Length: 233
Image (cartoon, rainbow, N blue to C red; front, side, top):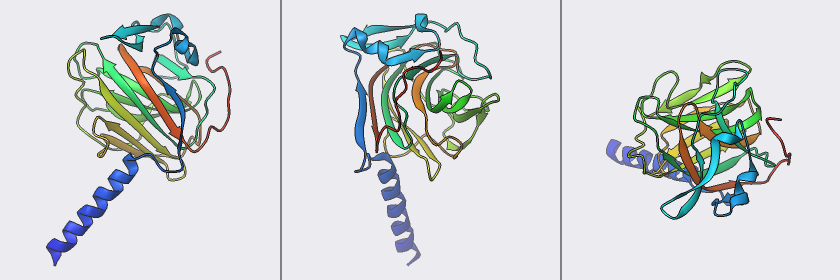
């Protein structure tokens, strides 16, 4: 009897994980970008536009962070940011392909930002090779240097070779406070958190200290809450 109950519990947990990873039926695709057109870069506002460019990888166009941004954040938080202009969201699912092309070390990273209200109020996930107080976690920037709010995470994330691409998904459900990050495996998240500080905001991507490429962005949401054109300026 205990064995049967255990099997039933595992099935329920598995169904819940699958449900979280799927796109909800009431969501619609509100933004998509493959960077095949050079003007695609104008969809984004950067902390330093000179550090970004449209590039090609094996015949496929993408946006690349190729240099360190000349940008000093108000509080300790990522330096290199590209923020999607004109789209403010509450609940959403973000899917994006990432290529981290820097050297291997513990904090080798790329970041995805969300719930961005202004340069000193937002969430971000720092996906890095090793987990510690400042790496491979989910952080909140709330008028003070970033603080980890992760409730569960792996020991680190394997970026692989410098030419490796990975599919990453961010799930945000505001009322429940749910934040989930998926890396290649869309069933089991690599990190989760629960927080309700920021109910809506912009979405962005970049890195704390490194370089990388970004492509195939898709965002699903029930709706776009508001449209504004500028963020850093």
